[in-house]
Image (cartoon, one colour):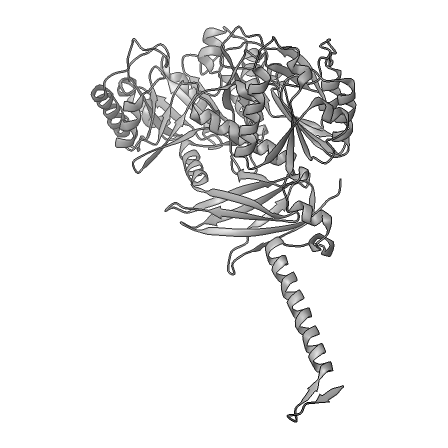
Length: 632
């Protein structure tokens, strides 16, 4: 229909209506395109202004964590005791720092079922719970809720009577073993590397946990539960290592019904140590919340693909040095790269031997830096910087000339070093220091002083000084078993197995056969047997890479990989734990010409592995990962 105006112009309302409709459709399509570019794949019902979608944009219970303040537990404490209140305060602080919100709820909230609008429920030290609470908690997690629990939950009834560990065993698939008595000020708690809740934490990191709250050791019984740490301390404790680890779980996570749980066998207020310890614990706490809420965690894989741990072989020449020849056949095939450590005075007296073994491996220097009985020794001191410098320079010069090779690794004669040593290492361009120190991790530590980088490789396993010299294990089968226990422990932790062998002990003819068996055992495992130089190259490249990830929607995450250094990095694997099952994974880029790395989805459909062949200096890649969620 057209209408003629007084001016003579004609207006066609049909054309105007159709034009408006086209513009409206075009605007809607542009809107959908913008939504897709930002949030990835979606379904129309997810973007409609429904009550449910609008609720997700507000500070609702679905986006909060409910923290139980258990009056039933508080009633068991002495009058005026602030233990529970202090715990709750600590939880509030950590949850705020993790950018989550929370409500503090009561026992009655759980009893009345007023928890099913929450996705995650925290039970800090809630050892006293009612029967009604137990019923509701089981229902909560069976229907898909998540529980974050510390200590021994529900081991007492609401009136303070002992109930036992049935709830613990049923829900978590674990068996209570023992409480740690407060006879020591603290106990070492070792964290496994490479798990969704330990991403970004050094493998074998040793947290110090105060014992005043009687931490708990447990044993995992069911495959639905994963052990993430252990209390067994190889540094101090004797006994069977494998058994000691399996029966001393201190952190575990897993599933029950459609829901999830994470259990800490200690209270979060019990963590002791330096600022570094609290930084890594906060990382553990944040990873835990992300796993419980189906948000991603990720990091660069600790070791080159496909390995889960690494090993270095370090023969040491001391008494009866010609016994080193007993390992030559094992390493001559180049399957086992080695670094032979020798004192310069001993090397001078055995020139031909040094020249010969230099054909089969690198040479490192044993250097006298002075003696102290332990790192805490404040009476005896290591040598002055000047004397250390003289001894280091003499050792490097002497061994370099005798072996006709570059010597870039040192081993303190008595096992200890100090800041003066580190300054001299940087000054002389030394790449490695191998010590007997027992530190807070089972992976090497990259140190940077000025523009120089070097690796500190500490003691991660028992050597033959202990196995033969201290334990008096002279039967080869017992020696082999002891070594293999430590290999399995380092594989479990995801750390570096440092095999130190001495001509005085394990390399003696009557014992050297154990070495061949042990090397075959290491080769049979998923362990990267490497040289010190290869180890440094990998570790330097890995530490240079920075990663970041964020959730864009329920079906898209953004992953950023950056190499801020001046050197290229090669053959890296970034593992992004989506912490939920997905399928139909597709990776694209925000910017054109961004190189998309190869990628795989793990067998459990919850982790994506990005295989980055090379990152150029100062290169950044932002990847968009789209997927479909798998309904549980």
